[in-house]
Image (cartoon, rainbow, N blue to C red; front, side, top):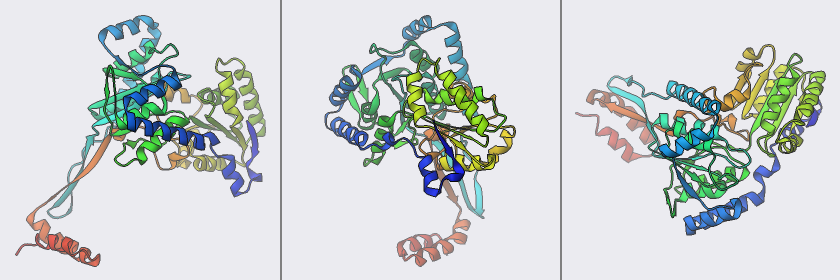
Length: 435
């Protein structure tokens, strides 16, 4: 990780220090994804199959989540795994039921003029579950369960096949816990294209979805971006690319814990970005030494090392300045490992999820705490939040007006319409004024 003294940087230098990895916006990624989209739009399922065979080595398959498949998956997993999946699913369901938006009562703004807000689920959601170098079974739960709680009628899950072309038992079991009836084994940009345009295969068809959800690598993130830019293309949840973590650690932070958290994100992907911010030179050195020590024992050490090469450790004047950096960077995950961690939350204005104190491991949020771990990346936390049930819903205002209310408000509306030169608007209001 690069060592940076924040006080020595000018404004541009500070922006450069917090820049995301270049590959996320590499022209080659954009061009290849566009080629895939053009092909799938023209040839449908045949193109998806060709790209899947070329890139993943297997053609798409629909996996039915039948009682027999679930029983086989349960038998293939240790009891601790199935129990953990059940607990995680229940916590996620509890949290999202508790935070599901509710229709508001009517509010009267003018006597006789009442309005309220009502919520409705979207029709079809395409859920991308990463499964390349690490099968993110947790992402299936974090997407499919909020969609279920929201009331989405059609949930289409796509996930890359395992190395042998099949599906991992944990994915089947998680799908059952989420109430799904099938999974599609398709990965990458071609999966996003299938959800966007629809695709027909020998064992079934994928219909175009209304909105795309889920994290992914640079290719998936670019595919979602291109899908949303199409005329009548699907909406997208947020920029959710390679993982990010910023740790604010004061001089009293435990180096082992800070290092473990940094590595937990670095092992995701070579494009993942980790940032350490501290006012203590000594603790920065201790944390980086601990990172190196723990790195040597990780199965995915090569991936983590590649990610760490793009990360940085920033020394700041004080923790207040560290919070300013966090808001400038707007990380997907923010860990506050300081003696006054709870008090710092009020200073944070841009983060996908905040983990407060030494016991709030980001890993707990990744798997089982309840809130979805699908969060905005690339600085999008300045304007986006993470996945909630509201992500799978739309809101509508409902307005009810009595005759008396119209007589009161119509002259106001007509006057404003004429200020804008819209006479037809004004006349429509005038007709409601009555005698």
